[in-house]
Image (cartoon, rainbow, N blue to C red; front, side):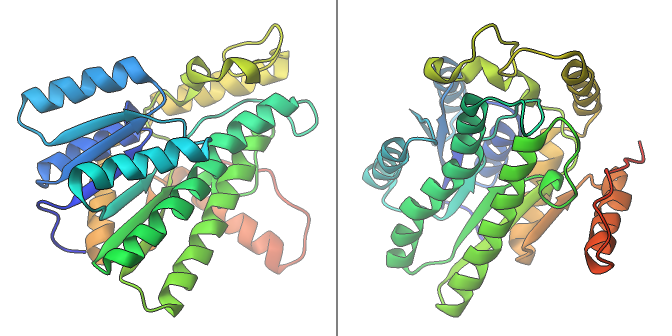
Amino acid sequence: MQEFKDRVAVITGAASGIGLSLAERCINEGMKVVLADIEESVLISIEREMTSQGARVLAIPTDVSQPGDVEALARYTIDNWGAVHLLFNNAGVITIGSAWESTINDWKWVIGVNLWGVIHGIHTFVPIMLEQDTDCHIINTASIAGLVSPSPGTAIYHVTKHAVVALSEALYHGLLQSSSKIQVSVLCPGFVKTQLMEAGRNRAEELHNESSDGLGKPAAQADQVVAQSLARAISNGILPRQVADAVFDSIRENKFYILVNIGPWQHALRTRVEDILQERNPTIPRLDL
């Protein structure tokens, strides 16, 4: 896709971070934008501010883990603007903990948003795009965490991001074989300065754990160390607008893998591939920070 003016973009996780920067870039490209996020008050405030500045923006509170919400998002988009051309399945959350210590609620919450959110977006919007028979592009937000061997303490997050990469690859191949006009990309950034570590503020009440920290479960000392280290790395990450710029460059170039700020992860990425090819046991990722 080369031209964006007057096209329609739908963005989940649009109230902050990468999603908000994508929305701002879409507006700068002359697009109509539908903002979707579970954080309703912030979302509505952003809609008002952008609209007051002349942007064509609509907002709809959306829990991407719920198929009915995503279906309502699609209906809202079509009812108001008649089409969708860019779909950013971007909403994401994280918990800290090992695979065995994380609670079932932790698993349900992170998989519900990070993986089922993308599944619901694809299941709902791809048929609409196919029927339109116009140039469209789907961008699924994964992470460099979806390409490297998982780090201790971030088991669930890595599981979902690896799954999003695989899902995006399957979607790409399927749409290519069907000769559709829909292109696909998977966004795999390194550290980005976002509110990811504060995602627990939007966690559904029924998925909270008893006596938990903001990330979702009782914080063991080892988990606190992981959380603090990750928070520091994120705070030193690149700005979300840099990711948005890279995304639009990649859409224009029709690139599938969108790798942004992965310099510190080069060794970890290379090592994982070598582990597999040489049939050796997984190596804990080493970051060149």
